[in-house]
Image 1 (tube, rainbow, N blue to C red):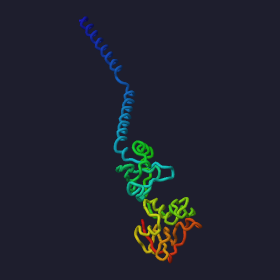
Image 2 (image 1 turned 90 degrees about the vertical axis):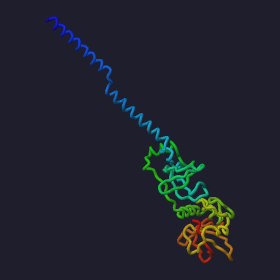
Image 3 (image 1 turned 60 degrees about the vertical axis):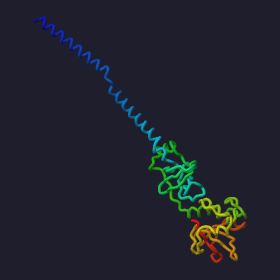
Image 4 (image 1 turned 180 degrees about the vertical axis):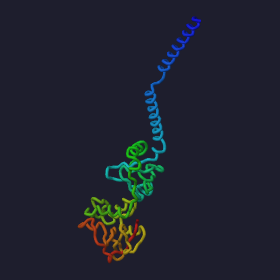
Amino acid sequence: MEVSMLLKKSLFSAFMAAGILLSVSALEVQADPLETGTKAVQETQESVQAANAGDLTESSMKNYAVASVSEGSYVNVRENAGTEYPVVGKLENHGLCYIQEQSGEWYRVVSGEVEGYIRGDLLKTGEEAWMEVHASGEENMPVASVLNTREELLAYACQFVGNPYVWGGTSLTNGVDCSGFTQQVFANYGISLPHSSKAQAGYGTALDVQEAQPGDLIFYADNGSIYHVVIYIGNGQAVHASSAKTGIKISDVQYDKASCAVSLL
């Protein structure tokens, strides 16, 4: 009986010792909860980074484009792919647009209410654009504004007031004659005109002089022969390359001498 009891105690002690050893072993091999949590966070971060990297090569990266010109400047959005086409909007530096398709060196883009074409070398695209958009916030970036061509054209033309008149000249800064002035001003908006006031009168939509709107051309004739052209700016005034003595100036429209008008806008 005593032997049996001793045997039972011995076996119980052995089982207890084995259980303690097993528990200790289990504790030794069990991962540290803090280390496990850190590893999980790292794995999650890596997954997010991998997902972002995937986004960077897919739709978001290929659609974004950002205007890249000098500070204070803007990019012209044109009606079609080429500088000969009219300007339909403008996108300031760091402004955002979305690429629809590429046509040679031009991109067809949408920005705000404006759709048109921008030359590729005036834009950041791909990863460079994606990084700027995500740094600035898509909702914080400016979009293109619709161009009021008449107002823009008049502001552009009037900035040359005071510059010289040169017969046969075509430089808005160094010298132009009357038809050279109108030719170069309208060329800036994608409208091509010949260097002749008589020939320019045959372009656009013919108007009665009294119907002319700001931005329209008014012509003067002597015995039916056109010799001078001006750009009407409103309120009975026009800007034009007048003479070698006065250069480019703003004058009252002499309606009694005006023969016809045309609208090119």
